[in-house]
Length: 395
Image (cartoon, rainbow, N blue to C red; front, side, top):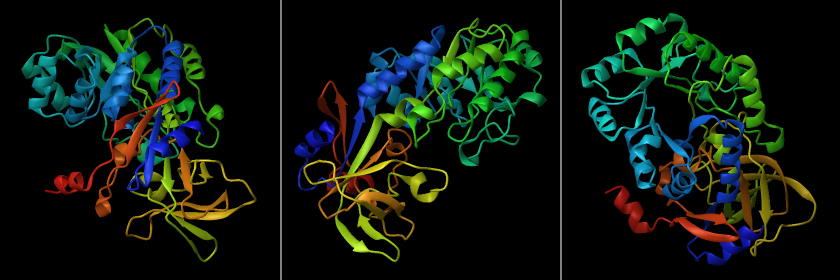
């Protein structure tokens, strides 16, 4: 890996891990989304998938919008240079102050519930607002990442909501929004959810339709997972007139996940009960889902020597443990890898989404250096946190 060798050459003695986000891969995947849905008015990439301002800026410069799940994420979008009209604000817990600020900025808004609609009505929006609808198509195979089951905390339930009456009561409503879930939700479930809300909106005078995101990633084989072209074709078959209303999308994981990898130095090797253990500097602090729910999550791993060269030789099962002070900080059990030695580097692939943005402060480990890779060159997206940064965080 050329990028790994160049990254290792930039590290200091204090750097024990480095994250690399491949901006070329990210842009390539974004362009595939754009090509699959050419009539879309806006493709807003989910900030929560990867909130690095440098990553967001690169997307905004390419014409992407940004989807914010908090007011803080709205500020990240603005810091990245994204125009307010290309920011979609979707938080289920918007305060009245945040709603006022959002309306003044004229960011795109999707209301989550009836009480929020009443709050907005008191503020009298001057442009069309969307409302999130729960299509009630059930949960996927991972309940934690599913949001369209009955009783979900998100949106207004489709079957219990009189949409024509709602749009008559709040005449500034102009759009419908939904999201089914992400990982663990098959393509058929996403299509069913979009189709249900799309058909319900045919009786309304819609100014836009926000189809959400949710396209999953097959971490075992990226080419075998659901693809945007397949999703687009299925939606056009299931939704009469699909594309006749300005579309908004909110993809995150599919764009960002395969775009990043992390390399951790191997500090120690020791013998475990069933297999040798490699002690890494990245674990449950960054790869939370991999550590806490290994039955649901998987990432490809490779081992390289101190110079960044792939290690050859017979493979054997290894246990990969992180640096945190609890027994569950294990990110891989019986992983077939070449022999590992202290000073080697273990690379975990496809960590560009929902990893760094979920960083745990347990044991107060510093965030590692984050580099961007594009056109054969590295750039700093975020410097490694210093010891003073960590102390300042807790002060």
